[in-house]
Length: 312
Image 1 (cartoon, helix red, strand yellow):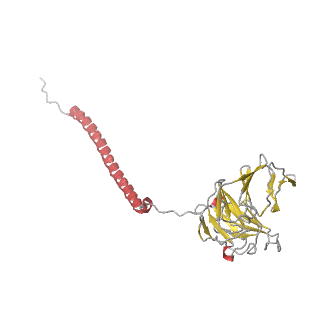
Image 2 (image 1 turned 90 degrees about the horizontal axis):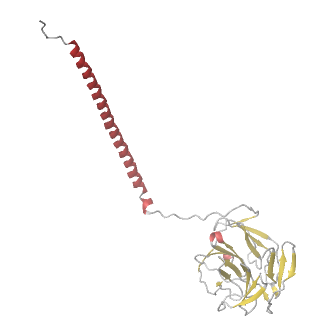
């Protein structure tokens, strides 16, 4: 969508606005189709050149899609409407294939909504119902973190969902910090290895609103930390894996002993072979010397031997 941000007003309006990031200016977007139903407390999901919006009004569970190339709204009917929330939910795009909707009002049951609709059962430490919360997806860890909202218990204010097993757990946070429990209608976004949490309120009327910003370092899976500074070059740490010893590796000590014995045997054989070869070479040299010595001596003996011939 180039340098423009498209969004819908969350205060129950049905018009679409666009923000030009370069010019830093708002304007109303003229679309080919408009909807007369006002919507609020919605989440927009961007996939390719389309923006998807679900619910946002009582008893209205449709999905509308905005094509950002043709600037046209389309109403979708993906299947039976979920029983869960229709506003105040959180929405996450998984692998550019499925939209996961978590919580919401009324109901607040955990549901998933892929492009054809289906329900996704979850296991583990399943959190209680909540709405007006927020969520981020950490693709490096295949994990979704959901934050605060109403009503969130103090021990479950931050929850983690494994997107491979669809299993809930309470992540470990090394230190105290973060927003007040029960913060709602705030924004959260993952930038680098940090989750930024900003603004929000502590009730539905927007009273006791805040402009605070908090940073959660999520560079190490399930070992998170509230921090006060941002490091733009910090990277995610790889998740340690447990190596199961194989039959080959478990027999490695005996293999090492066998290899050592084999090496010693080879050395002994080499020494013996070398000694035998040396003896053979020395014997051959000795024989050549003896033969040469005997041949010379015989000629000498023939020259010095007295003659027995009788002259007449």
